[in-house]
Length: 163
Picture 1 (tube, rainbow, N blue to C red):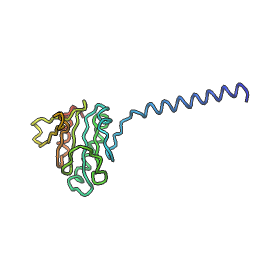
Picture 2 (picture 1 turned 60 degrees about the horizontal axis):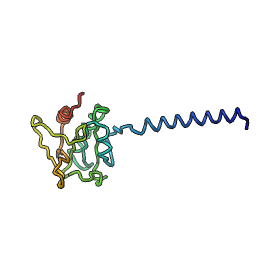
Picture 3 (picture 1 turned 90 degrees about the horizontal axis):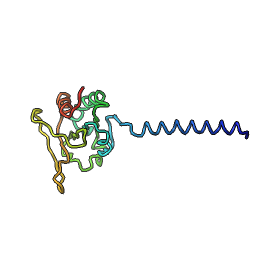
Picture 4 (picture 1 turned 30 degrees about the vertical axis):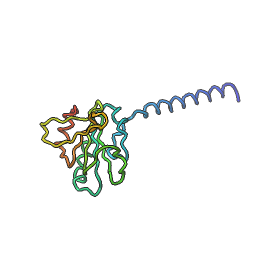
């Protein structure tokens, strides 16, 4: 192999390695805004510093089925502004982890700073706030039952999301 061929080969390898490195770096921290999820990594989701709504439902739950098109619409509109996820708990029962899913649908709300959302009384909705037993720290804010598009938008607005 001539010296000229070797130099060309080294240049091609360097270019390929640079392109692969850039692709890995750019895609490493990319947020997955897809609605459907089979598992929830709360720490990863919180690291994006966006408000989070996770809806736990099931394919046999009528209110869940009614909420599905609302979640799809809001998920598409809010990409880059909020993270909206849906988990079919009948297909992925372990996905909830220690989140208190006591009824379907169940929504969990987390502010952009990673702390549980604290709703105002202006919404006229019932939320449950759960605390860790050992520390008493606020762990989750949860709503049980169906939410309308308007209610979800009002919650997102309280969470600081502008449309």
